[in-house]
Length: 302
Image (tube, rainbow, N blue to C red; front, side):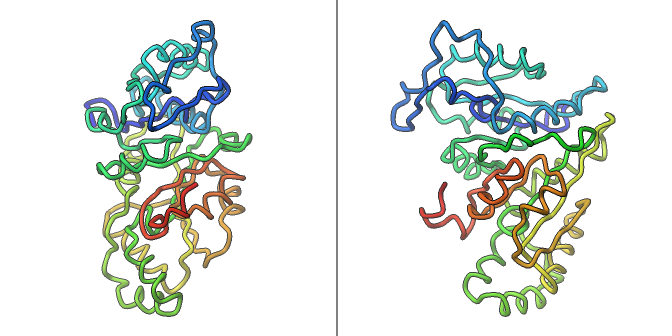
C-alpha cells in the first residue's frame, strides 16, 4: 500500500453505480460495445449499484481527515464515461478521485499499480482474471434495498471459510469422502494450518486497518462457515497461526447462512458457493468468490 493509505479498494463503475438503467449493452467479445452513455446523459448522475452501500461505509472511515481507505474506480467503460462517473460521485458525495477506463480491454492489469487489496465487479471474467493475477476479488450480486442500513457506526464484513479465507484443500476432502471422513481428516490435521485462500490478504489488511483506524467507525468481521465441531478447531487454529482474528465465528453445520447474516448485519458477505451466494443475496450484499472445487464446473457460474 502506498504511504498514507491503509487499504485500497478497486471497484468497477457498474458495481458502484446502476449503469444498467442507461440501457447500455456490454459484450466481452466486442470492445466497441463499452461505449459512453449518450452525450445528453453524461452529466446526469447514476443511481446506486450493488457496491454503493459498502463503498459509502468504507469512505466514512476517512472522516477524521486521514486517508484510511482509498477507493478507485476500475472500469471497462469508454473514457468519456468518466464524465458520468464523476458526476455520480459528486452527486452522492463519495470522495473518489481516481479512476481508470479501459474502453473494453481487461482492467485487472491495473490492480498492481493501484496497490489494490480488493477488486469488486459485476463482470465475472474480470474477477477471475484478477484472482488469477493474485488479487482478492469478488463478483457482486444485486444488493437488497436494505443493504448497508444497519449499524451506521460500524463496518461489518462476513467471510466463508473454505475456498474463501482458507484454500479449498479441506473442501476437496469433503467432496471426495463426505462428512464423516472430512471430520476425521480435519481432526487429524487440527494443528496444521490451512493454506491461505483468495481473500486471506484482504482480511489481513482489514485487521491492520482496524488496529490503526483513527475514526469513530469500527470494523467488525465474522467467519461464517458450514463447518461444525470437530472441524471448527482447524479453522480457529489456522487464524491463530496467521496472527489474525475475527470478532465473531459461526460454525453452522451446513445450515442456511442468510438468517445469520441478516442478524449479524453484514455490509457484505463473501462465499465461493453460488447456491449460498444466491440465498445470502436476498438478505445482504454478497460477493461470489469464483475459486476452488465448487467453481470448477461451468454449471456453477451465475
